[in-house]
Image (cartoon, helix red, strand yellow):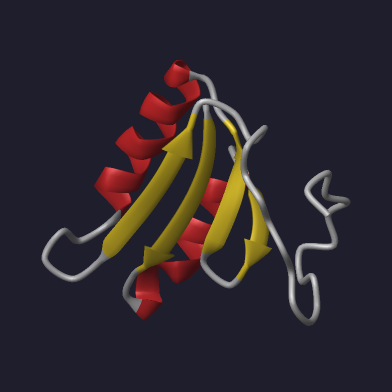
Length: 88
């Protein structure tokens, strides 16, 4: 599945979350990631993320689709990820 992940966590956990999500997805902007995951990778990634977060303070939002084939992505301004995208 193709995922876009957004997180908002307490300052003390930002670095840990960033490092953790970079193991699975491509960083595209502050607290935003995208990429392809298998079901196993998704379960593993979210299992650890749930342990790192404080449910009463933090949030993680995940948008998922079967593939990026129908995703229309436009970047206005600077592409902070530096990734070569096949959407443009």
